[in-house]
Image 1 (cartoon, rainbow, N blue to C red):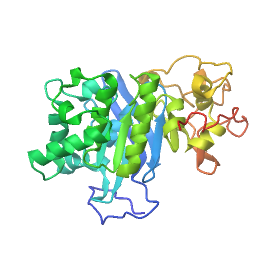
Image 2 (cartoon, rainbow, N blue to C red):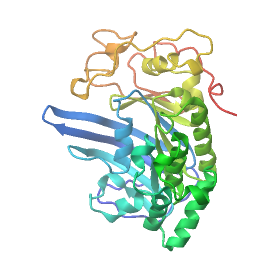
Image 3 (cartoon, rainbow, N blue to C red):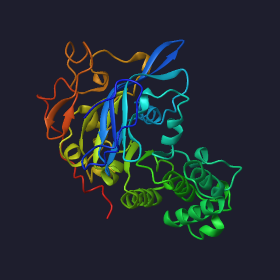
Length: 361
């Protein structure tokens, strides 16, 4: 696969089977502050297969949302992408390196909402309180498609019906505050999918919802993904959500990927101590077993430890080995399964967790 090195030019569409929709290569997004440079994303690599769901997992402050905002070029000063590539392999526009686009390049606006859409964490933040939900969905349609206002309204109603909004002909003229949290999240999903994006980014789409509504929203996203045919990047801190909704998973800690693989492989045989700690803390994946928490907390980006950044919290860390040098690189430990830990060959995998146990029927 050729990789553009300079200002990107769309290539011929390549919808071939097996080609990933997105490749993130050595992505670095840093924030330049009075206190120094904060490496929020510091050499991240992953790809998202076409039609599949990749979950990016980690605690708050590990760089997950910054990664997703980088893909959409939503990083504001003092942050900026300083290195790496974000290759979008679009069947409509060819291959584009999003990281290399100028801030005023019109292709950025074509990508946002048209080729890549996002479900934001808080629907009340994503939705305007002074415009009806119908106007907001129609605006997305009019921005990316050559249709009349009447047709845009009809499509908005059809999309509301598709995401399970009752009485869409009436709801379309309501304001966000007139709806429940679960209903608002359905509106945000409708806005994200109404233009049939090739990639959907879902940033903690169920965090503010109760368990029952959370399951409904996850199932809705999966069903719409199959219908639309898009890929999904799911941002979450909850491996229980991963077990329910994802195909592949990348575990992120302090701006780096520390473990990646299929959901089945990673839940059955987690190898990095951080991944193991995340799994042991989840009631939904530890049926009847004693839960434990990860000691300490995620350090600030201005105080990242040397060596493996997780070593101060790791029960297996060895002084003079885990706390020196550069962070360890990812190495293969099984088919498609990679881990960044200097002791990975010595440490056994944690007790297996069934990937099917968290999946809904």
